[in-house]
Amino acid sequence: MKNQIIKGTFILSAAGIITRIIGFYYRIFLSRTIGATGMGLYQMIFPVFGLCHSFAIMGIQTTISRFTSIRYSMNDRKGMFTVLKIGLFFSVVLSALSAAVVYFSSDFIAVHLLDDARCGILLRVISFSVPACAIHACICGYYLGQKKASVSAWCQMIEPVVRVGGIYILARVIISKGMDISPVIACIGMIIGEVASTLLSLCILSTESGFLFSKLTNAKNTAKEMFFMTYPLTLNKLASSFLMAFEAVVIPVSLKKAGLSDDNAVSVYGTLTGMAMPFIMFPATITGSVSSMVMPSVAEYQSKGDYARIGSTTSTIMKYCLSIGIFCTGYFYIYGMRLGEIFFHSSDAGLFISILAWLCPCMYINVTLSSILNGMGKTKTTFFNGIISTFVRLGFIIFLVPVIGIKGCLMGVLAGQILCTVLDIIAVYKRVHFKYETFEYIIRPLFMTLLSLGISLAFLGVFEKYSFNGTLATLLSMVSGGLIFLAYILINAKKDI
Image: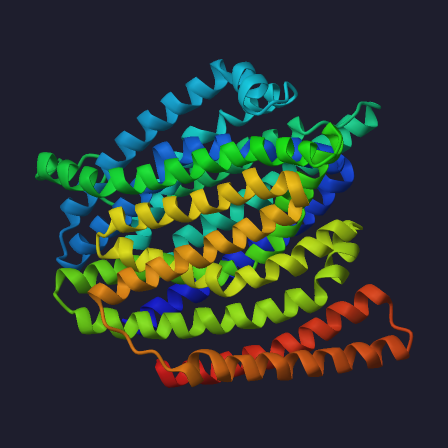
Protein backbone atom coordinates (compact mmCIF):
# COMPACT_ATOMS: atom_id res chain seq x y z
CA MET A 1 0.00 0.00 0.00
CA LYS A 2 2.87 2.36 0.76
CA ASN A 3 4.15 1.80 -2.76
CA GLN A 4 0.79 2.93 -4.15
CA ILE A 5 0.88 6.07 -2.03
CA ILE A 6 4.48 6.83 -3.04
CA LYS A 7 3.80 6.15 -6.73
CA GLY A 8 0.69 8.33 -6.70
CA THR A 9 2.52 11.06 -4.80
CA PHE A 10 5.34 11.02 -7.35
CA ILE A 11 2.92 11.31 -10.27
CA LEU A 12 0.89 14.13 -8.68
CA SER A 13 4.05 15.91 -7.50
CA ALA A 14 5.60 15.79 -10.96
CA ALA A 15 2.40 17.19 -12.47
CA GLY A 16 2.16 19.78 -9.71
CA ILE A 17 5.74 20.94 -10.13
CA ILE A 18 5.26 21.32 -13.88
CA THR A 19 2.03 23.20 -13.22
CA ARG A 20 3.68 25.47 -10.64
CA ILE A 21 6.58 26.27 -12.95
CA ILE A 22 4.14 27.22 -15.68
CA GLY A 23 2.18 29.19 -13.10
CA PHE A 24 5.29 31.11 -12.02
CA TYR A 25 6.04 32.21 -15.55
CA TYR A 26 2.37 33.03 -15.99
CA ARG A 27 2.36 35.23 -12.87
CA ILE A 28 5.58 36.92 -13.96
CA PHE A 29 3.98 37.57 -17.36
CA LEU A 30 0.83 38.93 -15.71
CA SER A 31 2.70 41.09 -13.19
CA ARG A 32 4.67 42.70 -16.01
CA THR A 33 1.63 43.00 -18.27
CA ILE A 34 -1.14 44.23 -15.98
CA GLY A 35 1.11 45.60 -13.20
CA ALA A 36 0.95 45.22 -9.43
CA THR A 37 -2.40 47.05 -9.22
CA GLY A 38 -3.89 44.77 -11.86
CA MET A 39 -2.54 41.77 -9.98
CA GLY A 40 -4.12 43.12 -6.82
CA LEU A 41 -7.54 43.43 -8.48
CA TYR A 42 -7.18 39.95 -9.94
CA GLN A 43 -6.28 38.51 -6.53
CA MET A 44 -9.16 40.36 -4.84
CA ILE A 45 -11.79 38.34 -6.74
CA PHE A 46 -10.27 34.96 -5.84
CA PRO A 47 -11.87 34.77 -2.40
CA VAL A 48 -15.26 35.11 -4.12
CA PHE A 49 -14.30 32.38 -6.56
CA GLY A 50 -13.10 30.40 -3.54
CA LEU A 51 -16.55 30.75 -1.96
CA CYS A 52 -18.15 29.26 -5.06
CA HIS A 53 -15.54 26.51 -5.17
CA SER A 54 -16.05 25.71 -1.49
CA PHE A 55 -19.84 25.75 -1.70
CA ALA A 56 -20.14 23.49 -4.72
CA ILE A 57 -16.93 21.52 -5.20
CA MET A 58 -14.30 20.97 -2.51
CA GLY A 59 -16.36 19.12 0.09
CA ILE A 60 -18.07 16.97 -2.53
CA GLN A 61 -14.77 16.09 -4.24
CA THR A 62 -13.26 14.87 -0.96
CA THR A 63 -16.41 12.89 -0.18
CA ILE A 64 -16.38 11.24 -3.61
CA SER A 65 -12.77 10.24 -3.10
CA ARG A 66 -13.42 8.70 0.33
CA PHE A 67 -16.58 6.78 -0.62
CA THR A 68 -15.09 5.59 -3.90
CA SER A 69 -12.07 4.26 -2.01
CA ILE A 70 -14.26 2.26 0.39
CA ARG A 71 -16.30 0.71 -2.47
CA TYR A 72 -13.17 0.13 -4.52
CA SER A 73 -11.70 -1.94 -1.67
CA MET A 74 -14.91 -4.05 -1.77
CA ASN A 75 -14.76 -4.33 -5.59
CA ASP A 76 -18.20 -2.66 -5.78
CA ARG A 77 -18.07 -1.14 -9.26
CA LYS A 78 -21.74 -0.15 -9.39
CA GLY A 79 -21.41 1.45 -5.98
CA MET A 80 -18.49 3.52 -7.27
CA PHE A 81 -20.56 4.71 -10.24
CA THR A 82 -23.40 5.62 -7.87
CA VAL A 83 -21.07 7.71 -5.70
CA LEU A 84 -19.76 9.64 -8.71
CA LYS A 85 -23.19 10.26 -10.23
CA ILE A 86 -24.65 11.53 -6.97
CA GLY A 87 -21.59 13.72 -6.40
CA LEU A 88 -21.68 15.10 -9.94
CA PHE A 89 -25.37 15.92 -9.70
CA PHE A 90 -25.08 17.92 -6.50
CA SER A 91 -21.81 19.60 -7.50
CA VAL A 92 -23.01 20.72 -10.93
CA VAL A 93 -26.32 22.03 -9.60
CA LEU A 94 -24.66 23.92 -6.76
CA SER A 95 -21.89 25.28 -9.01
CA ALA A 96 -24.40 26.59 -11.54
CA LEU A 97 -26.38 28.22 -8.75
CA SER A 98 -23.34 29.88 -7.19
CA ALA A 99 -22.06 31.05 -10.59
CA ALA A 100 -25.45 32.64 -11.35
CA VAL A 101 -25.47 34.46 -8.01
CA VAL A 102 -21.97 35.86 -8.62
CA TYR A 103 -22.77 36.88 -12.19
CA PHE A 104 -25.96 38.79 -11.39
CA SER A 105 -24.60 40.26 -8.13
CA SER A 106 -21.15 41.11 -9.46
CA ASP A 107 -21.47 44.90 -9.27
CA PHE A 108 -22.94 44.77 -5.77
CA ILE A 109 -20.15 42.45 -4.58
CA ALA A 110 -17.50 44.63 -6.21
CA VAL A 111 -18.73 47.92 -4.75
CA HIS A 112 -20.10 46.92 -1.35
CA LEU A 113 -17.99 43.89 -0.44
CA LEU A 114 -14.68 44.23 -2.29
CA ASP A 115 -14.78 48.04 -2.12
CA ASP A 116 -13.62 48.39 -5.73
CA ALA A 117 -16.04 48.72 -8.67
CA ARG A 118 -13.31 47.59 -11.08
CA CYS A 119 -13.77 44.02 -9.83
CA GLY A 120 -17.33 43.78 -11.22
CA ILE A 121 -16.41 42.76 -14.77
CA LEU A 122 -13.79 40.33 -13.45
CA LEU A 123 -16.39 38.56 -11.31
CA ARG A 124 -18.82 38.24 -14.22
CA VAL A 125 -16.19 36.65 -16.43
CA ILE A 126 -14.76 34.28 -13.82
CA SER A 127 -18.22 32.98 -12.83
CA PHE A 128 -18.39 30.99 -16.08
CA SER A 129 -15.47 28.81 -15.01
CA VAL A 130 -17.18 27.42 -11.88
CA PRO A 131 -19.42 24.68 -13.43
CA ALA A 132 -16.55 23.38 -15.56
CA CYS A 133 -14.34 23.26 -12.49
CA ALA A 134 -17.00 21.24 -10.63
CA ILE A 135 -17.16 18.53 -13.28
CA HIS A 136 -13.46 17.77 -13.56
CA ALA A 137 -12.96 18.05 -9.77
CA CYS A 138 -15.55 15.34 -9.14
CA ILE A 139 -14.08 13.06 -11.79
CA CYS A 140 -10.57 13.55 -10.41
CA GLY A 141 -11.87 12.75 -6.91
CA TYR A 142 -13.40 9.54 -8.27
CA TYR A 143 -10.09 8.38 -9.76
CA LEU A 144 -8.06 9.45 -6.72
CA GLY A 145 -10.35 7.23 -4.67
CA GLN A 146 -9.08 4.35 -6.80
CA LYS A 147 -5.50 5.63 -6.36
CA LYS A 148 -5.29 6.37 -10.10
CA ALA A 149 -3.29 9.55 -9.76
CA SER A 150 -2.46 9.85 -13.46
CA VAL A 151 -5.96 11.09 -14.35
CA SER A 152 -5.76 13.96 -11.88
CA ALA A 153 -2.19 14.66 -13.01
CA TRP A 154 -3.16 15.03 -16.66
CA CYS A 155 -6.13 17.25 -15.82
CA GLN A 156 -3.89 19.29 -13.54
CA MET A 157 -1.31 19.84 -16.29
CA ILE A 158 -3.56 20.60 -19.24
CA GLU A 159 -5.36 23.45 -17.45
CA PRO A 160 -2.36 25.83 -17.09
CA VAL A 161 -0.88 24.85 -20.45
CA VAL A 162 -4.07 25.77 -22.32
CA ARG A 163 -4.65 28.80 -20.11
CA VAL A 164 -1.19 30.27 -20.64
CA GLY A 165 -1.19 29.47 -24.35
CA GLY A 166 -4.62 31.04 -24.84
CA ILE A 167 -3.74 34.16 -22.85
CA TYR A 168 -0.45 34.61 -24.69
CA ILE A 169 -2.19 34.53 -28.06
CA LEU A 170 -4.97 36.82 -26.84
CA ALA A 171 -2.47 39.28 -25.38
CA ARG A 172 -0.52 39.42 -28.64
CA VAL A 173 -3.71 40.18 -30.54
CA ILE A 174 -4.69 42.95 -28.09
CA ILE A 175 -1.21 44.50 -28.19
CA SER A 176 -1.13 44.38 -32.00
CA LYS A 177 -4.33 46.44 -32.06
CA GLY A 178 -2.82 49.02 -29.73
CA MET A 179 -5.26 48.30 -26.90
CA ASP A 180 -4.50 48.18 -23.18
CA ILE A 181 -4.42 44.80 -21.44
CA SER A 182 -6.67 44.61 -18.37
CA PRO A 183 -7.01 41.94 -15.65
CA VAL A 184 -10.03 40.60 -17.57
CA ILE A 185 -7.59 38.70 -19.75
CA ALA A 186 -6.52 36.60 -16.74
CA CYS A 187 -10.15 35.67 -16.02
CA ILE A 188 -10.69 34.62 -19.63
CA GLY A 189 -7.63 32.43 -19.27
CA MET A 190 -9.20 30.65 -16.31
CA ILE A 191 -12.29 29.80 -18.33
CA ILE A 192 -10.20 28.43 -21.21
CA GLY A 193 -8.10 26.28 -18.87
CA GLU A 194 -11.01 24.89 -16.85
CA VAL A 195 -12.97 23.96 -19.98
CA ALA A 196 -9.93 22.14 -21.41
CA SER A 197 -9.45 20.19 -18.16
CA THR A 198 -13.16 19.31 -18.07
CA LEU A 199 -13.17 18.01 -21.64
CA LEU A 200 -10.15 15.82 -20.92
CA SER A 201 -11.69 14.37 -17.74
CA LEU A 202 -14.95 13.61 -19.57
CA CYS A 203 -13.02 11.84 -22.33
CA ILE A 204 -11.25 9.68 -19.74
CA LEU A 205 -14.51 8.91 -17.95
CA SER A 206 -16.14 7.88 -21.24
CA THR A 207 -13.74 4.90 -21.35
CA GLU A 208 -15.43 3.48 -18.22
CA SER A 209 -17.63 0.75 -19.68
CA GLY A 210 -21.13 0.76 -18.28
CA PHE A 211 -20.88 4.07 -16.43
CA LEU A 212 -23.34 6.09 -18.49
CA PHE A 213 -26.20 3.58 -18.35
CA SER A 214 -25.47 2.03 -14.96
CA LYS A 215 -28.34 2.10 -12.46
CA LEU A 216 -27.96 3.71 -9.08
CA THR A 217 -27.55 1.17 -6.27
CA ASN A 218 -28.66 1.97 -2.73
CA ALA A 219 -28.83 5.58 -3.86
CA LYS A 220 -30.86 6.95 -0.92
CA ASN A 221 -28.52 5.64 1.78
CA THR A 222 -25.42 6.55 -0.24
CA ALA A 223 -26.64 10.12 -0.76
CA LYS A 224 -27.45 10.39 2.96
CA GLU A 225 -24.01 9.12 4.01
CA MET A 226 -22.28 11.41 1.51
CA PHE A 227 -24.28 14.39 2.77
CA PHE A 228 -23.27 13.84 6.39
CA MET A 229 -19.61 13.83 5.38
CA THR A 230 -19.92 16.66 2.87
CA TYR A 231 -21.70 19.29 4.91
CA PRO A 232 -18.98 19.78 7.59
CA LEU A 233 -16.33 19.88 4.86
CA THR A 234 -18.39 22.37 2.88
CA LEU A 235 -19.05 24.51 5.95
CA ASN A 236 -15.33 24.43 6.72
CA LYS A 237 -14.34 25.49 3.23
CA LEU A 238 -17.15 28.04 3.05
CA ALA A 239 -16.20 29.61 6.35
CA SER A 240 -12.54 29.71 5.36
CA SER A 241 -13.35 31.15 1.94
CA PHE A 242 -15.78 33.67 3.41
CA LEU A 243 -13.17 34.85 5.86
CA MET A 244 -10.60 34.97 3.05
CA ALA A 245 -13.03 37.10 1.07
CA PHE A 246 -13.40 39.29 4.14
CA GLU A 247 -9.62 39.48 4.36
CA ALA A 248 -9.44 40.60 0.73
CA VAL A 249 -11.48 43.62 1.78
CA VAL A 250 -10.07 44.16 5.27
CA ILE A 251 -6.37 44.01 4.34
CA PRO A 252 -6.47 46.88 1.78
CA VAL A 253 -8.78 48.87 4.09
CA SER A 254 -6.45 48.30 7.06
CA LEU A 255 -3.45 49.25 4.93
CA LYS A 256 -5.20 52.49 4.03
CA LYS A 257 -5.65 53.15 7.76
CA ALA A 258 -1.91 52.57 8.11
CA GLY A 259 -1.34 55.49 5.72
CA LEU A 260 -1.21 53.89 2.23
CA SER A 261 -3.10 55.26 -0.77
CA ASP A 262 -5.80 53.20 -2.51
CA ASP A 263 -3.50 52.01 -5.31
CA ASN A 264 -0.61 51.32 -2.93
CA ALA A 265 -2.84 49.27 -0.62
CA VAL A 266 -4.10 47.15 -3.51
CA SER A 267 -0.54 46.87 -4.84
CA VAL A 268 0.83 45.59 -1.52
CA TYR A 269 -2.03 43.08 -1.28
CA GLY A 270 -1.28 41.90 -4.82
CA THR A 271 2.43 41.57 -4.03
CA LEU A 272 1.69 39.45 -0.96
CA THR A 273 -0.94 37.12 -2.43
CA GLY A 274 0.06 37.09 -6.09
CA MET A 275 3.85 37.11 -5.85
CA ALA A 276 5.14 36.00 -2.44
CA MET A 277 2.63 33.31 -1.47
CA PRO A 278 3.06 31.27 -4.69
CA PHE A 279 6.72 30.76 -3.81
CA ILE A 280 5.87 29.57 -0.30
CA MET A 281 3.19 27.28 -1.70
CA PHE A 282 5.45 25.76 -4.37
CA PRO A 283 6.82 22.92 -2.19
CA ALA A 284 3.26 22.29 -1.00
CA THR A 285 2.87 20.61 -4.38
CA ILE A 286 4.55 17.58 -2.83
CA THR A 287 2.72 17.64 0.50
CA GLY A 288 -0.57 18.32 -1.28
CA SER A 289 0.04 15.29 -3.49
CA VAL A 290 0.72 13.21 -0.40
CA SER A 291 -2.56 14.34 1.18
CA SER A 292 -4.51 13.52 -2.01
CA MET A 293 -3.21 9.95 -1.93
CA VAL A 294 -3.35 9.45 1.84
CA MET A 295 -6.99 10.40 2.37
CA PRO A 296 -8.51 7.48 0.39
CA SER A 297 -5.90 5.11 1.83
CA VAL A 298 -6.81 6.11 5.40
CA ALA A 299 -10.49 5.64 4.56
CA GLU A 300 -9.72 2.13 3.29
CA TYR A 301 -7.65 1.27 6.39
CA GLN A 302 -10.43 2.52 8.64
CA SER A 303 -13.08 0.46 6.83
CA LYS A 304 -10.95 -2.61 7.61
CA GLY A 305 -10.32 -1.52 11.21
CA ASP A 306 -6.56 -1.32 10.60
CA TYR A 307 -5.71 1.62 12.86
CA ALA A 308 -2.14 0.42 13.32
CA ARG A 309 -1.57 1.05 9.59
CA ILE A 310 -3.07 4.52 9.91
CA GLY A 311 -0.67 5.24 12.78
CA SER A 312 2.42 4.10 10.86
CA THR A 313 1.33 6.04 7.77
CA THR A 314 0.81 9.18 9.90
CA SER A 315 4.28 8.85 11.44
CA THR A 316 5.98 8.51 8.06
CA ILE A 317 4.08 11.39 6.50
CA MET A 318 4.73 13.75 9.41
CA LYS A 319 8.46 13.00 9.31
CA TYR A 320 8.88 13.88 5.65
CA CYS A 321 6.49 16.84 5.59
CA LEU A 322 8.27 18.34 8.59
CA SER A 323 11.66 17.71 6.98
CA ILE A 324 10.59 19.46 3.78
CA GLY A 325 9.14 22.32 5.82
CA ILE A 326 12.36 22.85 7.79
CA PHE A 327 14.40 22.80 4.60
CA CYS A 328 12.12 25.30 2.83
CA THR A 329 12.13 27.65 5.81
CA GLY A 330 15.92 27.92 5.62
CA TYR A 331 16.02 28.36 1.87
CA PHE A 332 13.23 30.90 1.55
CA TYR A 333 14.57 32.89 4.50
CA ILE A 334 18.07 33.08 3.01
CA TYR A 335 17.12 33.51 -0.65
CA GLY A 336 13.80 35.37 -0.30
CA MET A 337 15.12 38.83 -1.17
CA ARG A 338 16.99 37.52 -4.20
CA LEU A 339 13.94 35.62 -5.46
CA GLY A 340 11.72 38.69 -5.18
CA GLU A 341 14.17 40.80 -7.17
CA ILE A 342 14.90 38.13 -9.79
CA PHE A 343 11.34 37.09 -10.60
CA PHE A 344 9.25 40.17 -9.85
CA HIS A 345 11.78 43.05 -9.57
CA SER A 346 10.18 43.73 -6.20
CA SER A 347 11.99 44.09 -2.90
CA ASP A 348 8.62 43.92 -1.11
CA ALA A 349 7.94 40.50 -2.63
CA GLY A 350 11.37 39.36 -1.46
CA LEU A 351 10.76 40.61 2.09
CA PHE A 352 7.39 38.87 2.23
CA ILE A 353 8.95 35.59 1.03
CA SER A 354 11.61 35.76 3.75
CA ILE A 355 9.04 36.42 6.48
CA LEU A 356 6.53 33.84 5.23
CA ALA A 357 9.31 31.22 5.15
CA TRP A 358 8.53 30.45 8.80
CA LEU A 359 5.12 29.17 7.69
CA CYS A 360 6.52 26.20 5.83
CA PRO A 361 6.80 23.47 8.51
CA CYS A 362 3.31 24.07 9.90
CA MET A 363 1.69 24.71 6.53
CA TYR A 364 3.03 21.56 4.89
CA ILE A 365 2.31 19.24 7.81
CA ASN A 366 -1.16 20.70 8.38
CA VAL A 367 -2.31 19.82 4.87
CA THR A 368 -1.63 16.12 5.41
CA LEU A 369 -2.98 16.04 8.98
CA SER A 370 -6.28 17.50 7.77
CA SER A 371 -6.37 14.90 5.02
CA ILE A 372 -5.85 12.09 7.56
CA LEU A 373 -8.69 13.41 9.73
CA ASN A 374 -10.98 13.71 6.70
CA GLY A 375 -10.03 10.17 5.69
CA MET A 376 -11.23 8.97 9.09
CA GLY A 377 -14.47 10.89 8.59
CA LYS A 378 -13.61 13.52 11.25
CA THR A 379 -14.68 16.43 9.07
CA LYS A 380 -16.24 18.37 11.95
CA THR A 381 -12.85 18.42 13.70
CA THR A 382 -11.09 19.93 10.70
CA PHE A 383 -13.95 22.40 10.42
CA PHE A 384 -13.60 23.75 13.97
CA ASN A 385 -9.79 23.76 13.89
CA GLY A 386 -9.78 25.70 10.63
CA ILE A 387 -12.32 28.23 11.86
CA ILE A 388 -10.44 28.92 15.10
CA SER A 389 -7.14 29.52 13.29
CA THR A 390 -8.81 31.74 10.69
CA PHE A 391 -10.37 33.97 13.35
CA VAL A 392 -6.96 34.34 14.99
CA ARG A 393 -5.47 35.45 11.67
CA LEU A 394 -8.35 37.85 11.10
CA GLY A 395 -7.87 39.39 14.55
CA PHE A 396 -4.27 40.22 13.71
CA ILE A 397 -5.35 41.83 10.44
CA ILE A 398 -8.05 43.99 12.02
CA PHE A 399 -6.11 45.18 15.05
CA LEU A 400 -2.42 45.08 14.04
CA VAL A 401 -2.30 45.98 10.34
CA PRO A 402 -3.60 49.55 10.87
CA VAL A 403 -0.82 50.01 13.45
CA ILE A 404 2.25 48.25 12.00
CA GLY A 405 1.22 47.71 8.37
CA ILE A 406 1.43 44.52 6.33
CA LYS A 407 3.73 42.85 8.90
CA GLY A 408 0.68 42.50 11.14
CA CYS A 409 -0.96 40.39 8.43
CA LEU A 410 2.13 38.19 8.12
CA MET A 411 2.23 37.67 11.89
CA GLY A 412 -1.44 36.70 11.84
CA VAL A 413 -0.95 34.15 9.09
CA LEU A 414 1.90 32.57 11.05
CA ALA A 415 -0.01 32.52 14.36
CA GLY A 416 -3.12 31.01 12.77
CA GLN A 417 -1.17 28.32 10.96
CA ILE A 418 0.73 27.28 14.10
CA LEU A 419 -2.50 27.04 16.09
CA CYS A 420 -4.27 24.98 13.41
CA THR A 421 -1.33 22.57 13.19
CA VAL A 422 -1.22 22.05 16.96
CA LEU A 423 -4.97 21.41 17.09
CA ASP A 424 -4.78 18.91 14.21
CA ILE A 425 -1.86 17.04 15.81
CA ILE A 426 -3.85 16.72 19.06
CA ALA A 427 -6.95 15.55 17.15
CA VAL A 428 -5.04 12.88 15.21
CA TYR A 429 -3.17 11.65 18.29
CA LYS A 430 -6.44 11.19 20.20
CA ARG A 431 -7.61 8.70 17.58
CA VAL A 432 -4.39 7.15 16.31
CA HIS A 433 -1.15 6.78 18.25
CA PHE A 434 1.85 7.55 16.08
CA LYS A 435 5.56 7.57 16.79
CA TYR A 436 7.49 10.80 17.28
CA GLU A 437 11.27 10.88 17.35
CA THR A 438 12.87 14.29 17.92
CA PHE A 439 16.12 13.26 16.24
CA GLU A 440 14.44 11.94 13.07
CA TYR A 441 11.76 14.61 12.88
CA ILE A 442 13.71 17.77 13.75
CA ILE A 443 17.42 17.43 14.57
CA ARG A 444 18.52 15.42 11.51
CA PRO A 445 16.55 17.48 8.91
CA LEU A 446 17.73 20.69 10.61
CA PHE A 447 21.35 19.53 10.37
CA MET A 448 20.90 18.58 6.70
CA THR A 449 19.25 21.93 6.00
CA LEU A 450 22.20 23.80 7.52
CA LEU A 451 24.63 21.62 5.58
CA SER A 452 22.74 22.18 2.32
CA LEU A 453 22.54 25.91 2.97
CA GLY A 454 26.25 26.10 3.76
CA ILE A 455 27.21 24.30 0.55
CA SER A 456 24.71 26.36 -1.42
CA LEU A 457 26.09 29.67 -0.13
CA ALA A 458 29.64 28.48 -0.76
CA PHE A 459 28.71 27.77 -4.39
CA LEU A 460 27.05 31.19 -4.58
CA GLY A 461 30.30 32.83 -3.48
CA VAL A 462 32.28 30.89 -6.09
CA PHE A 463 29.80 31.67 -8.87
CA GLU A 464 29.77 35.39 -8.04
CA LYS A 465 33.57 35.46 -7.75
CA TYR A 466 33.89 34.22 -11.31
CA SER A 467 31.44 36.84 -12.59
CA PHE A 468 28.43 34.61 -13.19
CA ASN A 469 25.22 36.42 -13.98
CA GLY A 470 23.51 37.24 -10.64
CA THR A 471 20.31 35.41 -11.52
CA LEU A 472 22.16 32.35 -12.80
CA ALA A 473 24.46 32.29 -9.76
CA THR A 474 21.50 32.35 -7.38
CA LEU A 475 19.59 29.63 -9.21
CA LEU A 476 22.61 27.36 -9.57
CA SER A 477 23.52 27.71 -5.89
CA MET A 478 19.95 26.94 -4.83
CA VAL A 479 19.80 23.90 -7.07
CA SER A 480 23.11 22.57 -5.73
CA GLY A 481 21.92 22.75 -2.13
CA GLY A 482 18.48 21.44 -3.04
CA LEU A 483 19.92 18.35 -4.70
CA ILE A 484 21.87 17.52 -1.54
CA PHE A 485 18.73 17.67 0.57
CA LEU A 486 16.77 15.72 -2.04
CA ALA A 487 19.39 12.96 -1.89
CA TYR A 488 18.95 12.86 1.89
CA ILE A 489 15.15 12.52 1.51
CA LEU A 490 15.43 9.76 -1.11
CA ILE A 491 17.97 7.76 0.91
CA ASN A 492 15.73 7.87 3.96
CA ALA A 493 12.60 7.12 1.94
CA LYS A 494 14.06 3.79 0.79
CA LYS A 495 14.14 2.66 4.41
CA ASP A 496 10.44 3.39 4.85
CA ILE A 497 9.16 1.74 1.68
